[in-house]
Length: 231
Length: 328
Image (cartoon, rainbow over all chains, first blue to last red; front, side, top):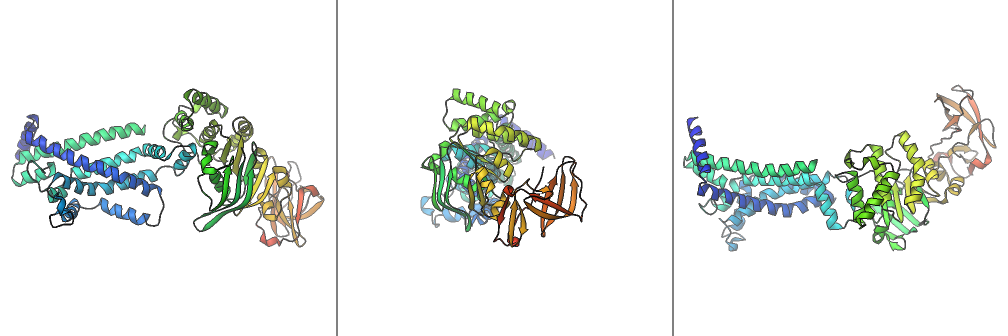
């Protein structure tokens, strides 16, 4: 218990003192996970929209595959991307392995099924006649899309929260494709693993607190926006 | 604005839904599409709104192919659907999407909301309106557009009995004031005759009769159409006799039948007598004060010749009829 108490105090001191390494790692986490979530939203929201609206024979199969993707262990996503990006792999020539870009790709793979599934569910929950109504009223395709997205905003924000929450807290994929290189690809989760293995409890706790605070702040802002829209 | 279907065939997947060689909605008139569920009524509205494309043939609204004429069409769906936000925001969005300037939007919104009885609901969240309020708001949104062609799908669905009676009384004036040509879907004969000048009877995706309401009602071409129009179909000789709803009365008439009484229901303002004529179940309404027959009794009922039609070559068993008549 004493170690935990000391660790917490030291962690708060590091945060209070604006420890350079801590904040640089936190910034990297935010950058990598933010980029992965943004890309997942760009790719996953339209796919989710299609799956929510369109009816075609393979739809259920695709939804099942997306559901499976939601439960994919991050380390497996990391392994897949590692196999693709490693020097001997099909995309090895791009020399992306052990870079932040590789981490973004791996996290994108983790977040996208979540974004697709949440978007599809929120679009499917809209009244079936709504797109017809907007079409008859004269809304063009883009306007219809925008108005439907606005109607489904609670679900879409939940998609962003779920996607960001999943990738900012994962460790397996970042470790596998980023390599946890100090000052380069080390993010908060991989740093916690490193400091724990070094028995540097204070730093590990400090990283953990910052990770929690960061996730909380972002999700709190999104929740605020979401709940204001719900009124 | 006139609308027409020419040689239209339409199917949902492999299931044929509509086969209409020709159907015309006369400009400035109200036409009711009457038919049982699945007869293709709502599909015709969706084709006119350009929401569906026919597999064959053409759907013309004011001479243009339907999807190109959407700006001339207003459509109130059976299910009142709104975006989140107030009713005012919903009505305003509809007018904004038609690119109307803000002053005209405000004026139209106020005028139509007042006429449709929803002015006091404008600042309420549209999603929290009651069934009847939502239907009025749905109608107001369509009428606010002042479209040359207005499509109404079951405009009286969702009302309670009192609200429906009120709306039924108000609707003709609202349509005269705010709508041009109107096509409305209903499966209620009385509603169709009250609201529309022209009647189109549909069954299994085909037009069985079309024309001025009174004419269509008086001359059903076949027993199926007669059944849709509420005629009681009664075996007569080798065929069927159709008796217009409300035409059967106790006692002999130009056409007379013997009704074997099975049940008698005293509904205070009228009496309903259910029984069989030649094996077909028929319900006859008696005026209040009429002597009550007892179950098992044989009652003579008749109708004037002008209210009866004959289908001499129809095998009685092949026609599905509600076989309901009343004297009320």
